[in-house]
Length: 171
Image (cartoon, rainbow, N blue to C red; front, side, top):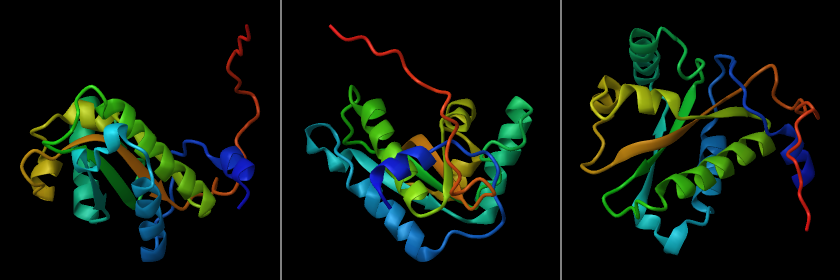
């Protein structure tokens, strides 16, 4: 797909079908994430966690609903990719790097005809002692920074509205 087309299709989608994301597409999303540039080439500072277990996805929504009154913290997406920090992260770069990794996943999802949304709310809200984290049994020192929910949607393949533009200041 042409890059400008991918950019026009890239939008945050908050409604998914039950159709699972294929193994091939998951591998392509992970590959896109791994193509991200991170500060000081610190690849050891990050880990990706692929979550498709329905019980973990449901736990995130249930736990989020209990804390925030919002039962659809991941919008019922069938796939969640957690971008996690490790003990080797450079703290002054972690948010910046996680954002770049998330955007690579987001763009690849658009390229594959999938929909996605970058999420931070449930990670912040549920904290480091959340039940879903216990279910994932992550290695020590691995904690989520951002997540990308991915799936099929009625909105997949439809261009974003052209009504959003940043101010451009030229000197």
